[in-house]
Image (cartoon, rainbow, N blue to C red; front, top):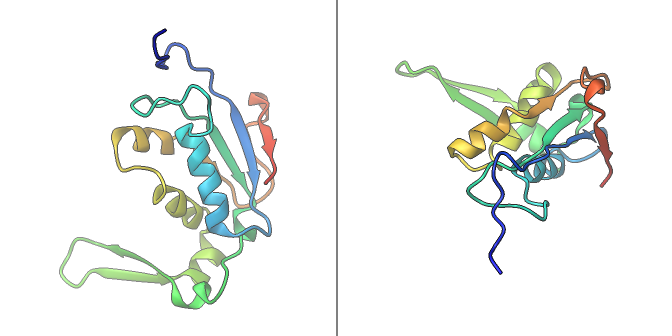
Length: 142
């Protein structure tokens, strides 16, 4: 008996919706990263991109526990000398909560071509409305 290896032709990708309202940001990001990677599938193959599509709703209502809102910073560099830009997570969650969720998921997906391709299947929305109803997404509770 030979081992089954998934490939791009045999995959059936599903759509999942995760509601982040009232849930910790990291817990939602872990679940989304696992779905994007396909880790929960019975036909998971590490060298094949076999993940599903994920829609995260209510990103603005995600919770950061402890004192992370005041002590955690989003840092980026412009590329110029002295160009380090820091944004406090309290400001980031108020102005761009979608970016905060995307950064959390990006940190949990491998930095490879498969990981970068998986991130293109992540859709994060600030509110409860999304434009993917035609794909008949399945709601995930955890």
